[in-house]
Figure (cartoon, rainbow, N blue to C red):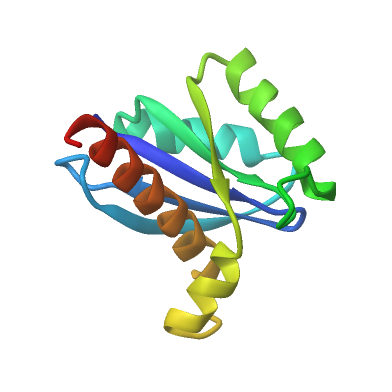
Length: 130
């Protein structure tokens, strides 16, 4: 199953997707969060044969929704209204972790999305095989 992950931010949105096997998360691109964002996501989704979209669910360390969470919920609804199957997956500090692993690059937000997707895949496969 082909999946993509989104690390949603107010200025930039990181995109990652699985490889052909559906088992490995790869950083793909960073898109500006502008009026073309949804069209670009659906163009990528169609081109890559993506079946499900995983969005990082951003919360505070105490588990309560943080300020960006409300925007993520709205974004999720817009994706679903256009026919996407969307899963929220908890994420904390993925951008910080991506910077720690590779330094700040143009693909940092895409790498953060890949970390979200890797964590989702690990959870999915551990639940299936554990």
